[in-house]
Image 1 (cartoon, rainbow, N blue to C red):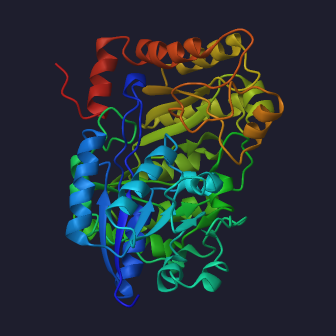
Image 2: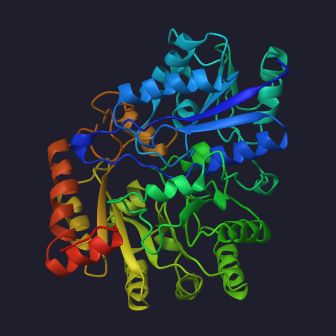
Length: 467
């Protein structure tokens, strides 16, 4: 194949409306990096984000059929907008998209990558319609090699992360040096289009300006939290160089961006580099608002770090507190949070002017009803401007997932159909999923909307007019 036209297709998120889970539209930073790489190598590329303007499945399928006819791609890369930042597994959606493309034109080569293909590659080769190539992990540094050798099985079999013709790669690819990646192209996936999707009602809402976008400056994780899939999907923790990050920030500011949301799983994990970045933003007099859209680790905070974050433009702290009981944090989640030590830091952050958002997780293995109520009690603390309760969902590749299997805690072994963090698939001795959903919904309402002053504050945070 000499002339190649590539279509990057971002699957729509299959959500449960009845569970009040909102479809996320976040800027697709990783697909946009792939766009940059392909453009630099003179490969024609187009992109479609199926989460935008989604009304229903029929509408989105009709739109995709028209787009395939119009764009006539040789290769379709089905790629999630972010490798780890999803609420629900996309297996059923991916299979439907593969079928639609193959029925439209059998000769189109399909490359499938993302969260679910990385975790469950074997599932995709059991269907009638299968991807030509399934890729596990971070694809950006391998995409050229794959496209240029898309018909050469000998080369494909030797590319780390490639699953080809039913042969499942045991290795998940990751990019050692993030500085080798170009700045994300913001034209094919037009950054201005995403100004219209501020995620109203969602924690990632940009309050200060509608001229916002997302970037990532780190990947991976070196901690061993038992419930989290980041280390499985991303491998070890890596930072881009400070110079590289500052160059992208300047690039975005020159485009008129006024607010940046960092899509980093662990922005603060290397505290020395984080402080260096914030000092550089301050010394360079780069003026923009920012916050960490994937949440920030509570255990990395100190007073100096908080002060540097504030001075560099951060105004909101979505903090992964997780639990109000030390046993759950230490023995079950293996999370290095010390409530006696770290809760006072939240109070200090509140004192110096941050908005504080608390992430809490309930329904973990061995957790009791009383322990869940202790978490609710902590969430009621007035230092939090807003709180969210997520219901624990077992994640492939995590220690706690294996624990659930070994101890027969799952109602069934199929977790892909769950609306992640909105319902439970676990068995508990003294409560059930109904209790957890009630906490997630009713206590959420009770805490966040208890009085008019708080309602007014949250309306401002979410960009909603409140009368």
